[in-house]
Amino acid sequence: MTYTIVMQLIFSVIGLSVLGIYIGRKLDPEGDLATYLAALGLFLGVFVGFMTLLQFIKSEERYERRKRH
Image (tube, rainbow, N blue to C red; front, side, top):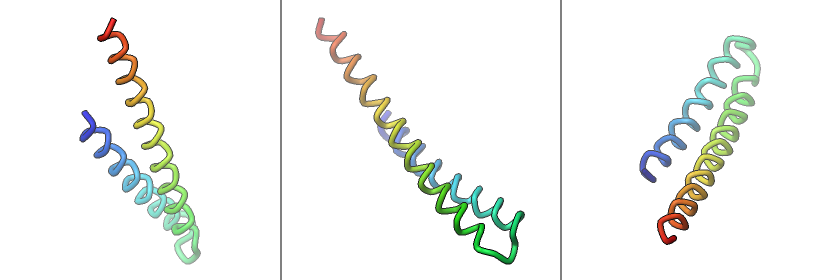
């Protein structure tokens, strides 16, 4: 399960960065918008990935507490 969460983190970071580059090049082919949107996608991907990882850890803790009782 952890492998799946880590792979989702990696692919969401890559996917959002590539999406940022694509949108930036479509909107402003000559400017730096693609770089800024790629960086934004990178940070959003990391943020969403870590939030997913934290939710996974919390659910595992709840499962362990229920298992003990």
